[in-house]
Length: 414
Ligand SMILES: Cc1cc2nc3c(=O)[nH]c(=O)nc-3n(C[C@H](O)[C@H](O)[C@H](O)COP(=O)(O)OP(=O)(O)OC[C@H]3O[C@@H](n4cnc5c(N)ncnc54)[C@H](O)[C@@H]3O)c2cc1C
Image (cartoon, rainbow, N blue to C red; front, side):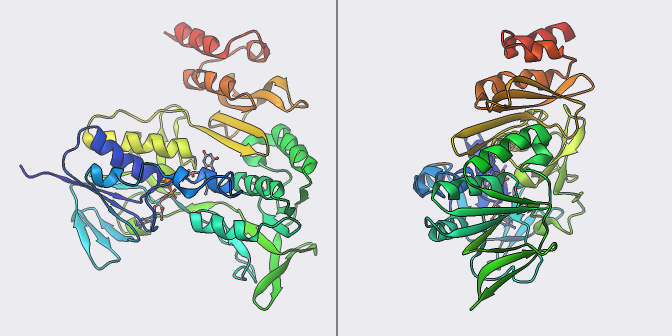
């Protein structure tokens, strides 16, 4: 039998990891990794942190050393976009007027930044952040004493604000919500972040919806909001979320509700096509729902899981999800996926900005966030995975080891 061809569409964290895993876990056929960007797979987290601040070079961000792909027989087609994945015909069409036939394909096309749809959004000096080039362009602007408006106070907006403050840039943040990171972390921890940023000189403008950007000679000079607030600036960074990139599979018949719908083994409705990373809206057995998350660790883990599924060696993807965020000298880690909770149990102190917070719903720990207590968050992973009722007193008690507590829940369940 002739060797098979596996094609991976999207050459970043999820796609790159999947292609590498296929090879390291024994696939001896042809692997073709297709990516729109001109770069080998790289990690985006440094782009809002040390890379943005000019502290680390590009080389540090690459997923594998440059020579790895060729040495391991992975054909990487850079600056190449898959225009259409024809699952029935088992063909990926490329913008290079070319095509690649496949036995199995993985969709790892990630996300693209949402745009502001207001007048002036296309002015020079208005940036968003997803790629090396975006980070370079923002760093070019970031000189001490210049003024930036950051639109959006989610993770990207907050991390960029922190890095720019560290570079001496004056920052105004505009957001329609009530506090930074509110949707994911809830009001108590959002209030902690509000304090941290204000202590570093960030000016927040909450409850404000941007209505337009103004400039002269084609370059931004100010933003306005619907309430009439006007903020002068030298540049703007827009961080208002991402949208999954699904054009290549638009007519595939796959469920494209919020990304590419896949089951717990990361399979689409076509037996030979899979999806992973930011684009994948996956059935999660632990949380009993479909979910799409936008985290680096998830992209890597799903890349591995998808490769194993393609090889027929994988099980269902049940990792409880973990991510982190660095802002100034503060490290947040989070495990789980809590969209609603009836109690937030705190171990440590919100006031001291050193705590572990447990998001409890119906007695179960659905999410854990920790500030400068990453080890405790990682030791709490089993509490989320166990999905068993936990005594809040034990969660609060510093003398109770969280990993042992999780193990005791699992033992009780068994
Ligand atoms: C600035 C920044 C900071 C971040 N910081 C953190 C952090 O601190 N912690 C954390 O957990 N997560 C962080 N993330 C999120 C994390 O980087 C993403 O979850 C991760 O990049 C997702 O990887 P992916 O491979 O699924 O998608 P992507 O990284 O979006 O990669 C998809 C790739 O596919 C390519 N592509 C799309 N369509 C096609 C097509 N049709 N043909 C060929 N190629 C295509 C794209 O050009 C892109 O290169 C950050 C993200 C950004 C932007």
